[in-house]
Length: 142
Image (tube, rainbow, N blue to C red; front, top):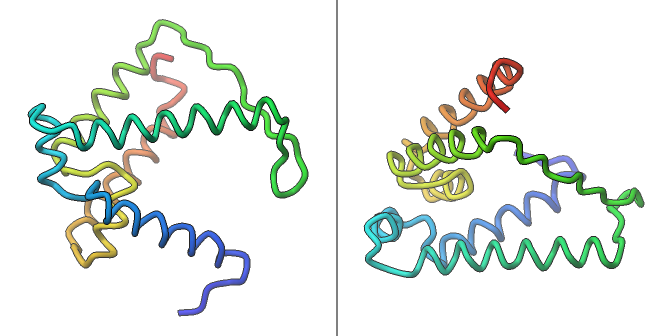
């Protein structure tokens, strides 16, 4: 299999991300079970560090007015909170899927890369769910 040149950096970043997920044990079903049972701080620490990293990254982008690789200004539109229905409904659906599968979307690909083929079913299901959301978006409460 040969990748187009433009995709090689993204492929390498994806491989690096998969290695980080594997080494940090984020893809471990047992670690996720520990989190849902409040038996270990491991996953909460990883999630908290991801939130902190995103907060710092966004502040750096805003304060330094960084530009994209194409030279375009990076614009982060303000969030409209509304009634919050979409957040609790979406969060509940996401959490149920995470609890049933034992992985969130990023680790699904890492698990598939580890040779756990049944995760292809979860990835396909996530794609179908995303497609359904796109098709029904205008009819959902936002």
